[in-house]
Length: 268
Image 1 (cartoon, rainbow, N blue to C red):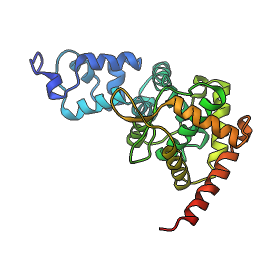
Image 2 (image 1 turned 120 degrees about the vertical axis):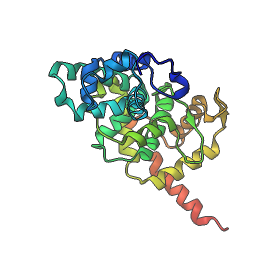
Image 3 (image 1 turned 120 degrees about the horizontal axis):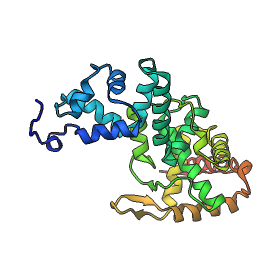
Image 4 (image 1 turned 180 degrees about the horizontal axis):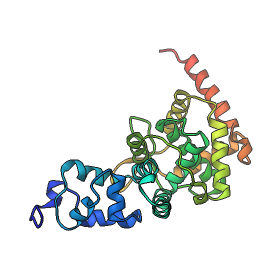
């Protein structure tokens, strides 16, 4: 239906401008992108010239546009469809896109260190404590996202939902997007907290959140503001005599014991 006056936006169909954004963002040509997707070689060319994609093809392209991790997986699985130069160029582009968000760089550093043997929820706990101790020890955020409050105990839901949809997988590179200080912090958090299962960390986070002042972001979502998190964990540093990274393990070791004791003493 070349030249159709269909309202792409109202129909939810990807537009030619959005497809061009995919090509530019991931530094991939029209024919190579079609090959990656297993489509006819001229499919993307036709869409750019006005042909209307089917819902199935449109949804696939929208997923690629919105979720660079999905495109990365596709690129790695079907790299034999591309020349070596084209593959490397596109891989560098998608890596830059993924890691341009510091929370993603942090999350994938954790994933890589675990060889991807970690679930999205557990990554959330480690991100929360990495952010908290960065604020307390270094007086600076590790990433810009605010810690949200919700019934699922998921502090960074956008990343969580993305990892649930795309799966947790190691990415070959990534640490070049972090400083040595940040890498050392992430490693210290993993060493201190990874001894404990998700139930223990969820209980610890739940206790902390009950002690913290709740704020609202510009979308009226409940959050724990970074200044609040920073002040609370500054007190933790003092109380548990945490002076540097090697001391961080004192906190979960003692806090979890305290929570267990409180629960054992609780009489319903």
